Length: 140
Image (cartoon, rainbow, N blue to C red; front, side):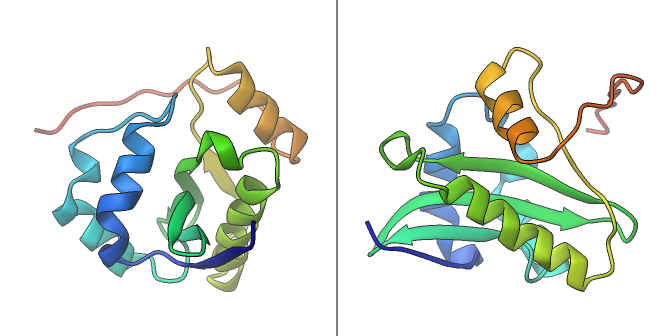
């Protein structure tokens, strides 16, 4: 396997969405529509990345910031390509993009029942924030 990493573009939409939809513990919503991701990628250049083995998409990470804090919204690697550092490399590319933009902290939302996901993030230096609770409101 020879993995190449590059910035995600909207031309990658179909394979990326298929990867995310077919990955466990990825929460998809209308925020992941073609229109919304087009806007998101335009607003956050140099922060979302894909991993390719030849022409095959094997991983993707969606990342951006609000001017103050960064966020990684989706990270997925094909099951057959896991345990090879691809997820770690995708995250590193995202974090470098955030650092270049002057962002000093990044967050990730992980389902509390996603033990493998929590272990991945903690093994890579991320820490839980037990003093915080996530609250949301739908505007549509």
